[in-house]
Length: 351
Image (cartoon, one colour):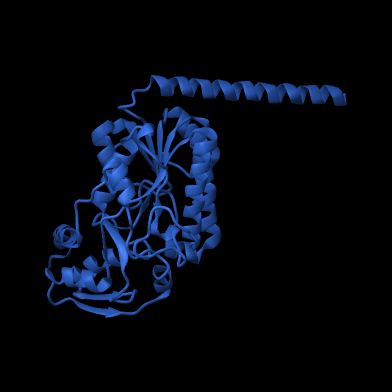
């Protein structure tokens, strides 16, 4: 009886292997037949700062139904009407697998993550979301031969890294769980690329400034909050010191860099992870730029725990390799970004 049970177990294992391989072969055939000009794209964490804007751009380029947004949040009516939206818990591997297969996904844009300050308040949850969730999407990308993008950050560097400028390749010893998880993602992606041929792509973003979303707890979010406070109350309290210099980027540049990067053929990339940036400024400098529009803006400084995080991050980002190897070039400087942000948000706070 024991031998008989063992034989049945072996048959089940063999059958599962055959079925698994058949699924892989079907998807590979679909990937080969799919037009490279019309990829099917899944965006995880799609309701975050970058997701909605990116979905709009990609839908214009590849077709409305080819870009699927996903998140664990209830979407607005506008999001639902703009194109496909699916509930997706990145910690549920089978749910993600079903989504990839049923929707014939070719690319995954993986935005789901807890940001720096929020992650420090709940380290176990940050590990689950930022690391376990990453493992799930990376394994699916390997299994179904998908192109995968995972964003990284200036937070992937630490106080031992060169800070002005911070090159593409240098020592990385971050002091936040957010940064640790991002370095883990960079290295795991590199490993999967060399070991399995995974088309892994990663950009290290600086602080991203946008008028479309509210500040979300990140260390660089003061550079978004200042616009809301300036236009609403004419008073702004900054949680960083006035001379704290950090790299920044207007969201239009950030999204354009991602789209240009993802559209490149694999053979055009000399590495898998690149720094990208547009400008570097201090709270004092952005205050002066905002005061061109709101002259009576009053500012106070009350550094909190985020100051320690900022002091461990790059002051100036060196993105010369992205500029040289795939012609990356930002369009917005600090004054150009401030002009657009004020113009976009002023109607919201008109009396």
